[in-house]
Image 1 (cartoon, chains in turn brown, cyan):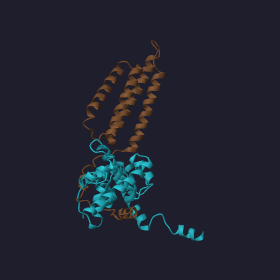
Image 2 (tube, chains in turn cyan, brown):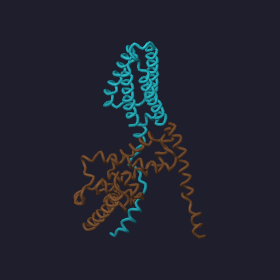
Image 3 (cartoon, rainbow over the protein chains, first blue to last red):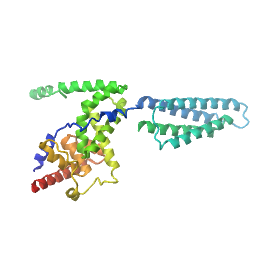
Length: 152
Length: 200
């Protein structure tokens, strides 16, 4: 068989084939969750911006020892940290329905426990910039893992 | 010049039927993108035969093709909100389906050599010996015996009409490699068909 004849025959092959069985039921059963890509992306960006802002603010306002306005600054940083927590939790709520793969669950639990521990430490020492930075990184990692689960 | 102008004017980019089908698809995509599963099922019913034929040829295995079709449509459902209506839904869906099949091929790389040498063709078992219509059945079986990567290039280029640049981008290879794989696939196919005729 010549090449041209082969190419012609290939072009004549049917472009459509009926599957041996109805595949829809197997598909329908898997359409449980629809990740909201765009909204999540914006939420993620907004959260990332907030995280950067809080980290920057905390760095600029890091209290000098025995600074008379240190308490006020610490209070401001603490409120910013609370805003950060609220935004992070709102972002995660959008992904609540996403089933977490079993292999990711231990890592997510560890990150949640770390975040809680850092928040407690921050409550005791609100002016500690290092803790705020740790919290930011922990949340970023937690969100990244959840997003990975959502996007499959 | 006049003839050329007239000829150009009388050649619409797509036929009226194609344009209508495209509009219907896009209406269903909008509904499905908003979460309407019935609309998505309608899209499935409209496109499954095309997607199945494509994946059946690329993977050369009936049961695997069924799994891939399901995977592809599930991925399409998840990715639908990102569809930008800049191309036909069918084009978008076929690319997604091909990508799904190639991901599966890559995942099996450890168990199966994608760059199988020519000599493997002589010992490669026939794929699913599905008896399709008499016309082309022999050709289909011969395609199924090709090494996976050469088979994918041949199907996409010679059956589906993709360009080498598109194939190279999708398969993550150089354009030259796509051309070489196609040349090799055709040569192997002719040898296989000749071998079949020789036995008869």
